[in-house]
Length: 279
Image 1 (cartoon, one colour):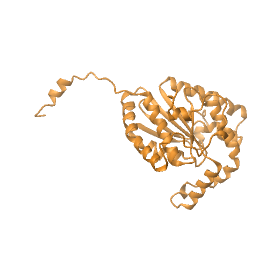
Image 2: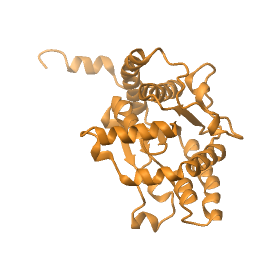
Image 3: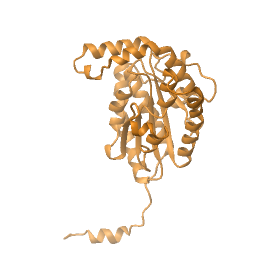
Image 4: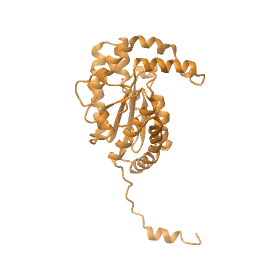
C-alpha cells in the first residue's frame, strides 16, 4: 500500500534501495502540527479517529493491521505502546514484546514465535521488537554465522509479502534516536525512582556496540523496506513528536484501508415491530 503524496507516511517512508541511516536527523519534526504542546494535543485527538477506524476494521473482519516497533534501547517502543496503542480499544488490540528467545523459541525457526502473535482478521497487533531482532542481535554479537543471518532478509521479505497477500497491512516504524539522547534517557532512569525499574546495566554495556547497531539497522532498512511493507524512519529524540508521528502513520494507514461495516440482511421493519411496546 503506497503512501499518499503529502502524507506523513510519504515523508517518512524509505523507498527500496540504498539507505544512509546516518543522514537522518533524529531530532527533526517533519510535518508536526506545532510545537510540543500542540503536538501532544494532536496525539490525543487521534483517539476519536482511531476508535472509529478500529471499530470498522473489527466489524469488517476481512483484514488486520500489524504495527512493528523497532529501535535501540530507550528509543521509545514502550512509550509508543502506552501513548499511541493505548488509544485503541483493548478488545481489538494485542501487544507482544519480544525479548531474548526462550529455549523453546530458540529450538524453532526464528519466525515461529512471530507467527503465534500475528493478528486475526479485524484485529490490530503491536510488536515491541519483532522478527527484526533476528537480523540485528546475531549480526552485532556474532552469535550465528553471517550466511545464516544474511539469508533471513529474504525470508522476512517473503514472510511479509505473504502476510500482505492474506490481508494483513504491515506498518514498520524504526524509532531513530541519537547516541546522546540514549545517554540522557538512561541517566533519566537513574534519576527518577519511578523509572529505575526499567534500568538494566546491560544497556550501558550495549552502548559500546552503538556503531555496530547502526550498521545493522541500516542493513535492516535497506534490505527489508519493500513496496508492500516499507520502513518508516521516525525521528524520536523528541518523545512528543515520536508519539504523534506513529499515531498519525497508523491513522493514515487505517484511513487508506477504509474498512467498511458489513451489510446485513436484517428485516428492520419486522424487528422494529417486535420491539414495539409493551416489549
